[in-house]
Image (cartoon, rainbow, N blue to C red; front, side, top):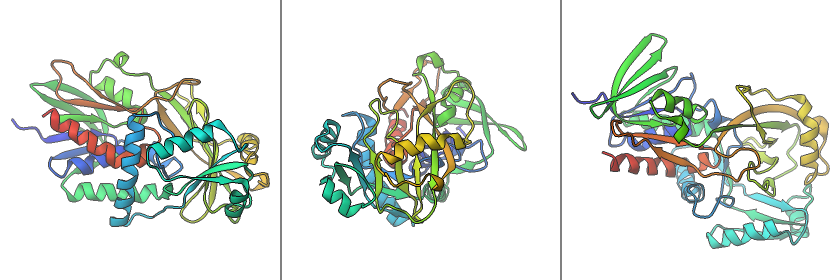
Length: 371
C-alpha cells in the first residue's frame, strides 16, 4: 500500500515550515506542530536579525548556509510581502587595533561579504551615542518580521498542497517495510498515518522526538538549553543601526547587542544562561537589569537604566556547553538497517532564521538522494 504522505515533518518552527514549503512542490507533505502557533518557541523568540555571515567557523554549514540564505531571504521578502529593512550593523571595539576586529574584517573580505572599517570619528558621525574606538559596518545585515515570514512560508506550503496540523503531538514512530507508521495525538484523539520520510525539526524537543522514533540518543550530540533574555528600551531610539559588541570568545552568543524592530523600538539582548534540568520558563527577571546596564554602557554610556524594562526570552538548542567551542548545525541520518529514511536536524540555533531557505533546500536534496 502507498504511504499516506511522502514526507512528514515534526516541528513547525521556521526550519520545519521552510522544509514544508521546499518539499511540497514535488511531494505530499504533512507537518505537525504541538502548539497552537507556528514558531512559538525558538523561532519567534530571537533578535529577528538577518545576518551577513561573519561569525561562523570556516567551511561550516552555519557559514555557507547563512551567506546563501541571506540573499534568498531578502529575495523572498521582496516577492512575498514580508516586512524587512536592510539597516546595517556596527560591530564596535574598545580599541582601534583590536585583533578580533581585524580577524572579522579579514574574514569578511575573504568571503566577499561587504564590510567597512570605521574610525572613532566616523562612528560618531553615524551613531553619536555610541562609544567605540573602531568598528566594522556590515551593510548587508537587516531585520525581519519573523512572524509574518513564518506565515508566508505556511501559506506557500499549503498552496502547494502541504497539510499543516497545529495542536498535534508526535507520540511515536515505528518503521516497517520501508515506511514509517506514526502516531499523532490531537484534541479529537489519536491518529495513525504512514509516511516514506520522517524529518525531525523539533528544535528544543529534537532528542525527545528522536527517542520516540527509536533512535539511540546516545549516538546524537548532546543538546544544551541556553536561555537568552531581552530588555526593551523606552523612548526614542538612540540608534539608526544595529549595534553589536565583539562576539563572546566561545561564541556562546554575540553579546548583549542593540537591535531595532521594524517600528523603530530598541531592545537589548540576549545574554546567555545555560539551563539545568527542566527550568525552561520564559520569564525575564527585573534583577537582570544591572547586568544588562553594565554590558550596554560599555558601548552606550548614556544609557538610562530607568528606561530598561524586561521584555521576553528565548531558549536556544545548542550543541556546545558552557566554555566549549561553538558547534555547527548537524543533519543526522539514522542509518539503522530496518529504518525508513529519517533525518534529525540538531542544534539549529542562530543563524537558523537567516539560513532557513538554504537549509530547506539542503534537506530537500538529502530526501531526494534517499528515495
